[in-house]
Length: 427
Image (tube, rainbow, N blue to C red; front, side, top):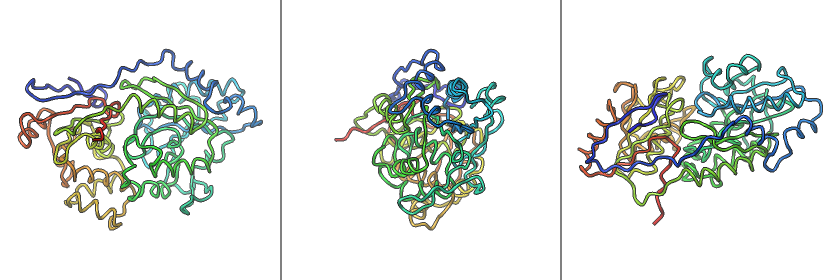
């Protein structure tokens, strides 16, 4: 069978004697002519005036800022942007007035070939595009404070624009509940300090900071608060299938349109399991989600949902970017030689304070529950010394697991990343 891995996938040979369960996503047919469907959605928005009416009501629009997902997201932004900019052109807004702002959050800057994938060759030549840089204080504007007294710092190009539009895609997120909607604004184009406050050790430790948990999620609630204070004129969001084709579209109000797609995902992505599995094999869904070990933690969090205490997760991510460009503190901690519990407790006690503690916090939380094998292009000496295990192939990892557990150990395979998420049935 084939698992998503890089751009081409990876084949694994399953021994017929292994006790294997495979969860494939429900068949989700792509929308025919997605550009026309997106235009239709823009003109028939959810709980919002149409974009045409918004443009008309604003009067003389001198600048438009469209926020688009960065290269670590598999959303076909070029289709959304093509439809959106075509509509804006019809409304009399020329290309010269439009800027695309890449919502990098705390991720690295975009590469040239990635910008072409995000925008498409045509729009890349026509429209100005810049990366958000969360650490560049000169590119940020303060727009008030949060309820817990933290200054709200957002990209100045967005704040200064006459028309503010978010694009993105909605799928379950491993600590934000769901991607899309408000998340494109914050943390997508927020300042580093306020992102770190949102992603604090306390918030990440919340039992509600998990895949698919929404209303009670402290990170989600903080993002909604900031988004309302900053302002969003319109959003265009989509859902995608395992081939990254668009299957659903919703436009309009940033909360209501997002909630429609969240409801769709809640119905179509989660699969109940009656008891945890001994071994769970999972990845991030292939390129570009599995570019590095830092991003691969998301797939380990999928495994965490289904694995038993003391079980094993086999994480299948290509990791062509290594540990992760710019993730020096993450790399330093996975090579610290400390026990996972020690790292986790030091993060909670603020003895370890690093710029993006949430990834190592989640990784160590999972390592306290289960073993983790890493199947990637990384060598054994590149995955650290805090407990991650190395195997050359998925089959080798399974055989090692069966030596530890029993020969009839239960094995769950999730070949398509977060397209299917296991949900333990409450007893």
